[in-house]
Length: 283
Image (cartoon, rainbow, N blue to C red; front, top):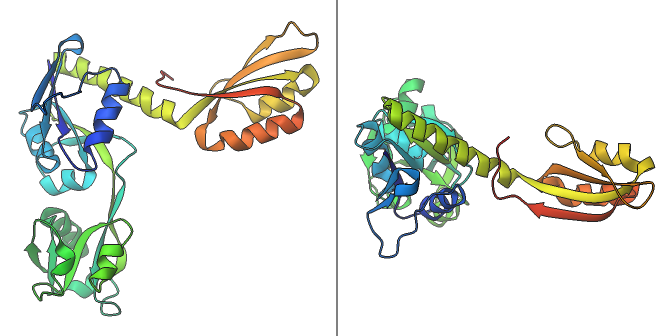
């Protein structure tokens, strides 16, 4: 039975449960249970603090898990990233009082507050920079104002919290993070089969989220132009209509391009253009 860790709170929690549900797994909790047994899929789900998941997986206690790349690197526990999941994106950066520091090398000998000491230490070590790390559990942006740090290293989304604390980002991003699927390094044969099935299902959902199905009718003389606009993955499906001189076409189109493709299809003569979202796929 495959044992999978799922974040129990925070920005990783709901999207992870939604992804697993779309992939056919039962993860709904009626009473905030800490463990759910999905017998049909031969999987057990454990709901844990996001920061702890890489530790459980890396130690071999659990087989796989959903966490953030930043948390995975900071844990340094041996879990291996397998797949990007496309949500909970964030950028990890340094910040200090405006116009005081310009790059990571300026931090030499200074105090840096962070909730991710291992991640920051690794990054600075690669640059040959030595600092005094001040580990905090949260709200690191207040540390400079309160005098316990000269700079901070933290997740930056809009930068509003930093600006409100009188700080500005500087230097290159330390890390671009997002939700990732991780595995323990020594999965057994049975667990490997179940894990690969999980990966296929997740990829099927993630790919489906990137595309929509477009159906339309068009005159035969416009078929080549219309198909050039909707090449699909392999090729469009074209079928004759009962109306002489017309065909029906079905093809996959990138979701973000769909409104523009509909305009372009209309201009070449396509009609009855329909767009349908996808739930999952195997491509």
